[in-house]
Image (cartoon, rainbow, N blue to C red; front, side, top):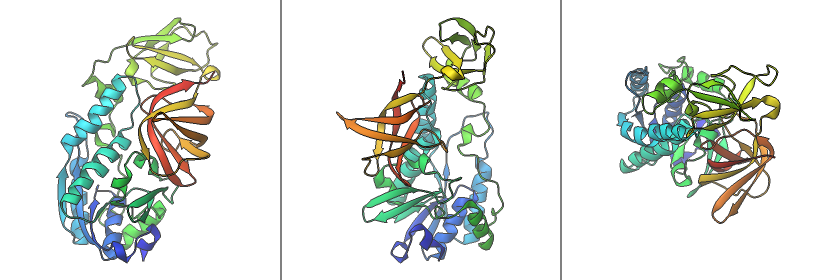
Length: 363
């Protein structure tokens, strides 16, 4: 059966609450679990989005209901909009206001999908939850190992990297052992009503919304000065919180002292509302990062591979615990800002992740 490819067997034929997003991945997950003999309940999670901005949540919920009706499974709607607003959107806004670069998808998974949703399913008496994430889990009693998804181009383990182990133990990822093309074929085999629907665009309030337009509703954003590495005033920008390290566009250079070369953001100062830029050959990365909000999922001794953003190229790294602080050292400098999530792997297994608290520039 298809479930055997994702580590599922008859001992897991229990009541599973599936987070139906309206997309094909979660729909196929529900179909696979039902085919294995589980009692499956579809749950659509309502999240918050700002007034006045476009959102497909209503359409997504209708698609999820159609899937549940087609599979003949119970359907529930779980309103987590307040939780989402307080723990994801607010955190995101405050992070950017401080000059950080938080990842809302990572926050959503930790606080909403594998936080409040898991708590809800447990209260309802479910034996587990499932989502359409492209990642794999190996369960061993009260322990669990999080692995990359089989489809490297769709792997979403990075977005799950801050979910605590005790929450992952309760989870299932039925499509994690498949290529996306295989999932589409399964959707057609199950005759799912959304078999040909385009993939969702992720978090609603960030989908097609301009960052400046969004942040301006909740925090003051005003233009400021662009500074060269020598301290000279060379241009203007739209607001320091809008920029992250390595960004090339979105600011105006009126006095380029680098021979006309493209300029990149080297640092931001939200207190002074300035950004410092430099040419690519002088752009400095960091090799040492101190982490907060650390999530340990496995043994992280020896050489590991670290990634600093979704689908980024991995870099060899080591992690060290000193006085309850975890410091990560990379084999080569990388551009990364405070607030970004750093995830570390041993082969395909995600063993450690955290939020960058401090990045130390290479000399």
